[in-house]
Length: 138
Image (cartoon, one colour):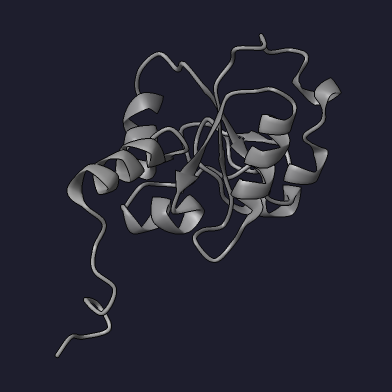
């Protein structure tokens, strides 16, 4: 007798390995972004939510670029090989994927920060607010 978990057997190990390894080409997580932000940044972090949500709280160092405004002209200040990382509210939101798709369609390298704001807060990391001076984030 099998459970709902094992009713469909897991993929063979080599197939599972390829699948999970490929996932890292598409996403990163809050811990890795947090760690990278404390060093020289080799990517651009984009908060793809609405400007009002960005103002209320965002990942420190993120830029406000709503996913619907990701167009070629908005990206001209960065070289074509710039890596972008998008995030939105969290796992219940597909804005990060929509933003990532727009970037990919424009030929830009991109990953999603899994977990978004929800994950960032769950990890215990502070948010910055647009109306609070740097160094006084909450």
